[in-house]
Amino acid sequence: MRYHTKEYYTLMMAQGAADLYEPIIDKEYTDEDIEDLYQQAMDRYIEDEREDYDAPPVLILDDGDPDSGLLDLSIDAALAYENREPFDEEQSRADFEELYRDNLEEPDEDLPDWVREAVDKRILAMYFMPEKIYRKLAAEDEANEEKFDAMDDEADEKLEELLESLPEDYQDFIDILEDLEDLYVTDAEITDDEIRLTLSGWDDEGDEEEKLLVFSNPEIIENDGVEAKSWEDEDGDTESDCELLYSELYMEDGRPEVHMLFDNNGLKYLTFRCGEALAFCGLGTLEGHITIS
Image 1 (cartoon, rainbow, N blue to C red):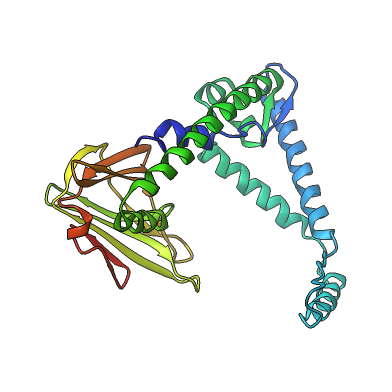
Image 2: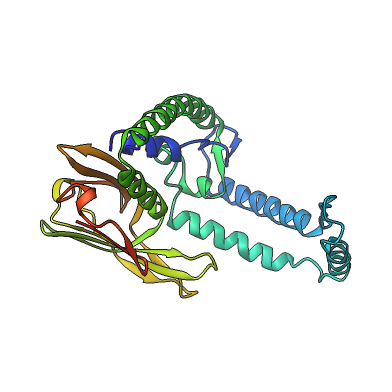
């Protein structure tokens, strides 16, 4: 990758890392102190949930369409609000406990290592942070934001110039690759003879669909060990430990060169050249399957 690099993605995900946290007094926190913080965080969570639950429905009128049915909708919303069940504080308490447990099991990956090493994970799981650590992280956030903005502006400019310089077939190919970004990769078969990526996405109706991207006779330039494991969650939806984040396309030695960045138990690159120029490889789609020679 030349622009949407590992550094670029890491900086993007680190944006506003301190925003979710509340600074607390700098001191050594005992178990009893942490229990007090836990109760404080739970009480605040419950009150926030109660406030949201008790907030009346907001109606946005569409002046351009008097027949839009918004009046009927507003009446139904008002009636539902007036006849709602009492706020379930016990459910809100259980939700907080589950959130806390989840945060302990899977700490915030967007926090720098130095923060996670310096602060008790129980404190971070409640979205608290000692003030000195918080201020240092906020300053780092600001520096990271400036650096990311510069990289993002350069990426937009250079990739736009590249797009305009490529033949039309290549521009169509870029559109295909961009449509696949942020999809789960449920299977990845990468050999010298073929790269076969199976991806899970959604159609216009919100139904899950599978897409297959195949490159024949690739010349693999870089592979950080991209693999994929997938499973179904409790709702029957597909999940995976591999996600296609970005793709870039270049013309090198008369052949398309594909650069890919994956989130796959860490950030990983896959870079390769296609077997032939796109003009001779029958770029097309068939029932969601895309084959590139």
